[in-house]
Image 1 (cartoon, rainbow, N blue to C red):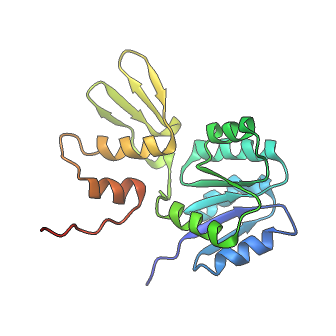
Image 2 (image 1 turned 90 degrees about the vertical axis):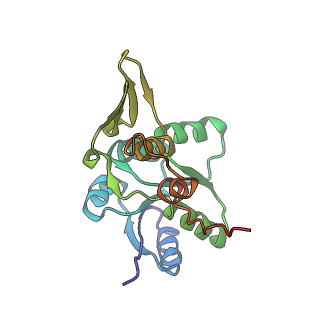
Length: 195
């Protein structure tokens, strides 16, 4: 049976949320539509989607929910927004969003972005991941940080965390570019032909 990814779309915009949901469903994706942003964390915990897309009428609420979700999960988060100020976009990325999708956007481009991020999805709650220790480095999934024995702590982006988690889980082992592409970036790399 073929794997069908799940996307949680959080949208309280009555004119566009059903359209987004229907549009994405046509791409062979299982869509969970949540029209009450207050239910985001509960619906995520129930359904464990592969990705979450926010398109809500309050930028401040979107940032708050992204921050809460990022504390719980390692998965791609997209924010659909018409807000173009550098300050807002920076705040969204700092809160944990993986990509800000600016409105208006052509459906084909939106679908392409979803496919790219689904290839990178880690459908794992961070509190289910074990902490890792290699040498003087301690990787803590619960807050996506790298702690050093001297007391310093570095907060990691989602991609940095995935990369370090993969590498630290294989200490002393050579990891190929192909493995990294497949397991960290979600990109399938065909074996290169020998000349």
